[in-house]
Length: 329
Image (cartoon, rainbow, N blue to C red; front, side, top):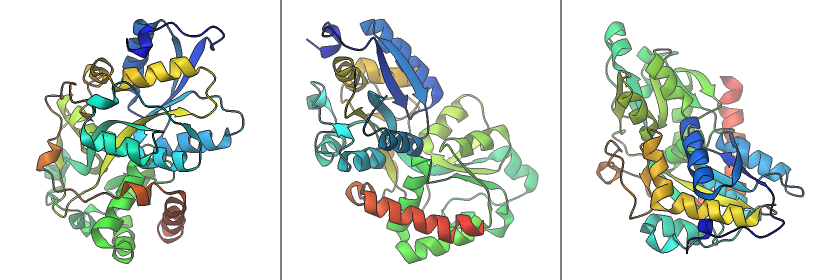
């Protein structure tokens, strides 16, 4: 019997505290679905992935959070390497796709892959026509002076999406060339946003021309009627594995394990479709969103989660980004 159908042990905390790293709409749908399934009350707070990692670190000795759900896997791996997460193998693990099983093994059993999504960018076709500009198809196209002040990207200090972007450039071009590229791109970037989905949301509203984000976030906006054209860059791109983890020291451990089981189940992963999301689910038995980007058709880098999920490498790259890019922005 699945764990979420079992009764919780006496003395368990009344409320499950979850930090959510996906879109707010999915946070809400997931919260309602789990509460309806189990009767467990949830406090669900949405934050950017970097903010969640900072909070879990700060509360190491007195955690207030039980579960970290969603957000880029490299930050979950970093938390695992810092002994901030609790090992747990879900009964759903056997049905997960190979990339999710590999991720779980990489984390030492402390984090599980929930979904995957490719990085890219999207532009507002109405603004592009109004400005009479060329349509970008590659990362390097974004350095065109025609786009001066018309691009938004996330800040990798707070946004897992943006750290994936930074790590993608390093893996595509090599570190020195990647920072030269980002310095040139910076001339066209109007704003580095706190949240990773904010750039394409701004492009969808016509507040900027181009937003760099995960492609599934742009698909969701396009399906809602926004005039976005979604681009898988010609040079290739990185991707994320969104994850779920139990925080070490969780006060409501039975409910936390039940939440992980539900998040990895076909029923739990169906909440993404219900919330209008387009990530690729990790459970082989889960339905694939009809409009999800076909990541098998996108040129992908062999993303090195182990390296870019390590605390030292992440911290070093963020320091260099702050010094070489943000300080001169």
